[in-house]
Image (cartoon, rainbow, N blue to C red):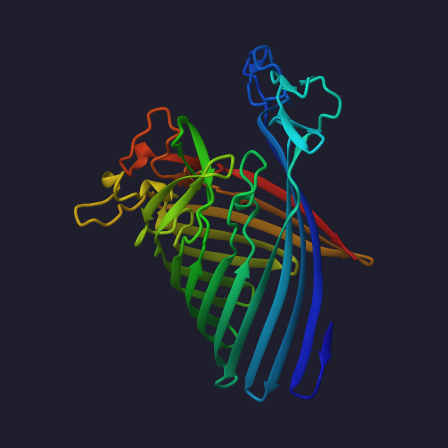
Length: 447
């Protein structure tokens, strides 16, 4: 809703409800001349004889169910050159995980057993195995987490061409799905919300053929999760690795962003976007380690102060040119540069006592491997037209037109490598390669 309270005040708000189901699995798509593929990922099958063929699922197979509800309200004041607002939102996130490859569950009275293919349990004189009635696919309970946002801002028009603004915000954000459940459908302990405190200052200038927007931000991000779950050896069984969700990982994000647009002619437009960031971890803490029975089995200190936040390019520059040949028909090209991109890391590696190799001669933690800079060249074309009361948009793109080879993500000192090492370099990292040249065509119809 949007309600005008007076000449200067207006109130708006609404409700947002969403539901989502994500299916996650690996799949055989090409046997490369073979007859079948042997896979032991499904614990509910005889893995000694299981053969997989094209379109069969392998490795892992689970569903993520998400329910999300939100309320928002905004009060806005506008008088002359001055505009201010205050915004309040509340949210409630629900998560549920279903795993088809881990052992099934069987409820016997108040006791729940995990039954895999080879499991046989004797309980109160009865034997329970994979053929017992009542077996169910392993599902977690629903886990609901609240969150809220409080934001306020002010904008002042210096004249018809220029304005300045400032925004303040506090965000309490529910953790992402991957930071709520581990791979066995068990909840992580001490699930805490992320807390984000931010301030933004900006300036805008606009005339008929030229527009410029510049803003600077300073964000304190508390309890920020790493992009990948942290793993470490089980103190009671070094051959087994435990997964943990580490709280109290804090980061400082600050930087400058700029957008520029210039109409060279009536149908030729140039745009430039520049983002310069400086994002670093500020945490030194102790992680509490629990085993699968939720028993505290150890404490791991870590020191990640001064390390760059990984898995995101902190320097990005995009230059684009768009030419409208005739009304409705255009072609455009983009050049985007990515730099200052560091690999993600395992905080547990930065234990000053057990892993002195992770620190330099001054006692500072070593930076993760820096991913090589890369660029992308994309081309686009489109045509819009109307037929009676229908509108049509035909679009085509050539993405990564030069077929450049690049790395999008990396894990520093990855222990899952066949020849694992801890040299903070390319030989110690696992990487994810970017997609090569590809073509995209779409047709949109609107009433």
